[in-house]
Length: 94
Image (cartoon, rainbow, N blue to C red; front, side, top):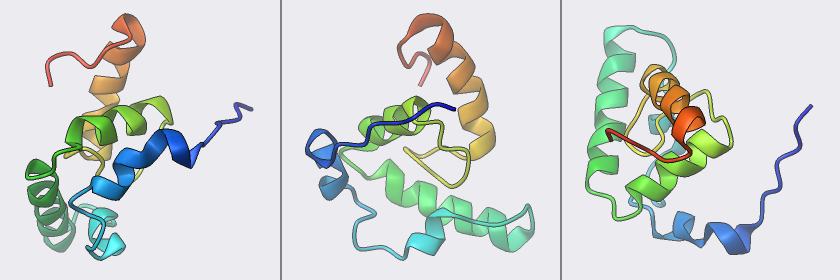
């Protein structure tokens, strides 16, 4: 079991996210129905306007967030990004 050290002082970027005042549920669509796909697209649109999008994505990769939209990516999109991140230690081709 891996214990993740979460230090809010180190994650201050979270307070600057475009999602701060959005409904949290929007970023956690369930399933692959048309409704869920639309919800994910809406969440990603918010992410795409966000100044801390890359910080968010890197956090999701480092802490293995396996559900929801983080840094403008879905679970499936992060799987391939995570593989490359493990190899290089950096977010490439993003």
